[in-house]
Amino acid sequence: MKYKQWLNKWLENYVKISTKTRTYLHYKQIVNGHLNDKLGKYEMNDLTPLILQKYISELLKIGNLNTGKGLSSNSVNSIINVIQNSIRTAFNLGYIDKDVSNKIIRPKSVGRPIECLSIVEQRKIEKEILENGKTHLFGIILCLYTGLRLGELLALEWNDIDFSKGILTVNKSCYDGKRLDGSFGRITDTPKTLSSIRTIPLPKSICKLFRAEKKKSISPFVVTIKGEKVSIRRYQRCFSNLLKKINIPHYGFHSLRHTFATRALECGMDVKTLSEILGHKNPMVTLNRYAHSMLEHKKKMMDLVGKNLII
Image (cartoon, rainbow, N blue to C red):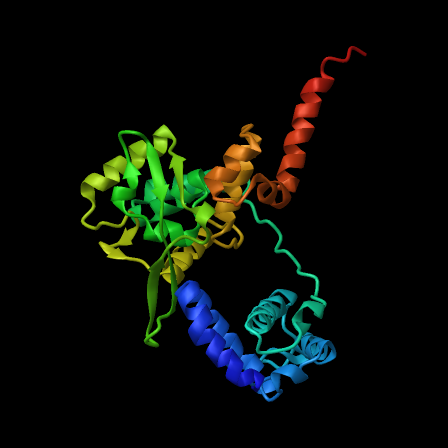
């Protein structure tokens, strides 16, 4: 069987029924855009570690289908995931004699730098939102004080907030993407991972702000524009326009989540609690991601300890 034939069988019979629609469509895009053309012609048993590694090197040099330049290491690692998962399944089912995909050497992933608003910038944003009357921007404040991801924020409904107990439940997320029928729009799904399903205690000030908003709301969704639900792209533009208006340099929306985490650590929140609020799989993810923030906190704590020394 040629690899192209197997990839299509694998997608429809194994990936489609076992993953989120978003994952299935992403894998399908990789198969149709990259793998079918370059590796699909090979018989499954003719694929060797060297053939696969040469292809990975090619992706890093000229793999971008739009520009002809190299793909990022993160993009290449996504393609490697598809290669390894598809070949491993074929091996486990007895379609091929060996799993050669485990010999692939991955390019080193480059993590994105953590962007965090300064205290001054954060206060400036909060002041502008609370004074300008555009209540749909209150979602930005909610992210600053809960660490919600953008998809979680826009999928949030009023019945997900228990004002009597002061807690918010994250049980869904949304994104802009292509549906199975080929149409494009906002899609609501379960959160990113199982650990992303979580309950977040709300600060009293946030409860007060949003309890007042709920009384005026005509939509089941917490964040709307003129009563209508908002797409990811549109809300990102709202945030960008807000920053431009008050002369703050550009930040990605995800910086609000990083800002929450950093402020929480600065206030002395323990890593396990922060990890659970952020919906991380375990505290080590939080530690690794916010090591820079932890270092600043450690310096302050050590300075306090150092005050005991009499010189």
